[in-house]
Length: 370
Image: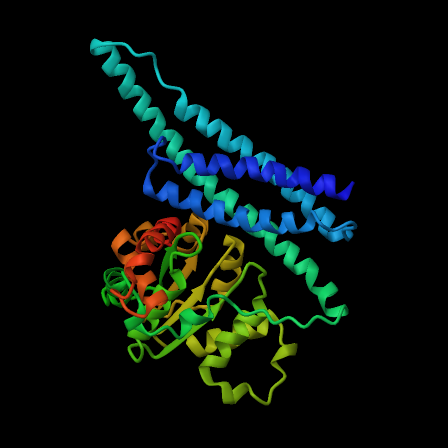
């Protein structure tokens, strides 16, 4: 019975993956940004599908895995319905009529399709977040079982390499970095300014923010950076920033027992008379920003905060008064994507062996500028 249920889940997923692949074909002339979101969603679902296929060989599944499998199946149905509706709208063309009527009919259809494309772009972003959330929830549920079974696991934050990346190894970020630096260092605005970088996972938001942070080293009275996550731990975040003020002052104190109010009070007191620059990476919820921003006083000394997020509404929440402080990150160009891939794979931009050029080009295309 369990095998049948797993097979049913993979069957739904296989059907969905085929439709996503169809959307990426030349038949549907989609915008590059929409294609990238479809590829990103496809990669997430492919990973889940591979895991489901492994479960097909297991006789008995634990309750947590069963629950996750059922959630994946229901989620797959919802995503497939969304994709079906989208494909139907794109395929619903007007009757072929000549003359001025035909021209008007085609023009109206194009305008409608533009609205459809914009709508699916937002939906794809939400669907991707739903998939990621389901995967992360499953991982969290598995952790206690892994510990009790004697399996040792170490979770490494995938953003960690971005904190120490050499600028010479990066590709296609110079212009964007310089634009953000100019926005942050504008001395005409003495009020506290928040700049937000928004874009889905894999675009290099953390890398870009850290490069701006490094470039501005020494230009503020105080600088700090902190990595957030989907699981919001306000005390950890506040302590992480506080320790960057002067760690020796708190080394012998039991800061673990401090409440949010005391941590905020300490930070505000330290920052009040300073021009500071703080990078807060990966905010998932506007409510998290509303809570954490209390720690940053507006001393009207030209202080700056830079946030990164995958969610447009969160970026808007961070930059309530100035929409021009929101920077939407784009995918890499095809040339920059190839350059970056060749550097990582072959350690130089022109090091790809001739016999691997075709598959290398295919891999770069598959990444969709991420």
